[in-house]
Image (cartoon, rainbow, N blue to C red; front, side, top):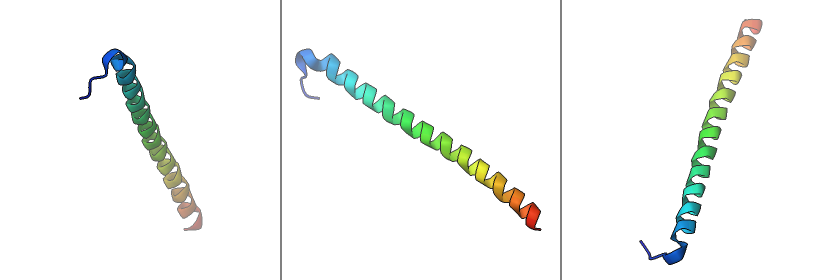
Length: 52
């Protein structure tokens, strides 16, 4: 690890914030994907019952 000197706190804090935001974005994307897939499956099931 490079010597960051007096900026170590700011640099490491920035890395931590960036990693945290990326993890948050991935989690929200996966949650919304699951929610959308469930809604789509419900609509497709309803259409199958109406047409069958």
